Length: 312
Image (cartoon, rainbow, N blue to C red; front, side):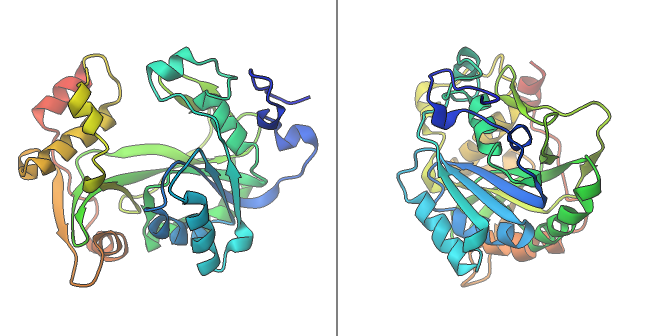
């Protein structure tokens, strides 16, 4: 019997945890990606991850841009093809917020079930949730590589700040240092560390008293492409932020708007970074620029509009 049967009766997407099926977890750290149409980012995202963790599990949720193929080619180029597992999850997954709230937790369309199904395929003692647009710095990769064995005798969870980088073109980007986007990424595997349904999204449980390790700033950038215009529907359809708790998304939207309107300095907290000739701005920021900055990274107060909306 599965631990969590899919509501729709599709046994291929039931959740069975390795500890209930009698499988032994191996010491190590597995990075779990849940991705859709991230082919553009993966050549930057995957190489430092392969250098940092023991295994990569990439779950493709209906991509049409050859995300899985790009992942396999990058793994081959990195000499890590034997450390990559690619799975398909063909079901449409409810978006965070109202859709998620209206979807039963055991439905194949639920964020909660999706996450539990993904992580049920991990076969190491620790797992790391990671996004397809997050690029580790070399320093970050080294720290995670060391942690992957140091954590084995603990039950600690690990949080890492990430800094949004809006790519304007190959040589120019805006780095947002105004907010500390901090959430746990690394968890032990076990029955006390599975996903449950929360109000707006899935939530990974952990027992009270678990040690929390917070890594330093400057180890990870979250890539946003201005030419992708991912907030076009927000401008077209309008977004009511009156009751939202998604202040991070609000900030990202305001940053995108400010850059498009040609006045990012007025927003506060943004740093313009220009790469040397022949170097892509993602490479420059992640491999050189961040490493050279004094710590803590400079932060500025939030603009008034965002403060007011966050408090609402």
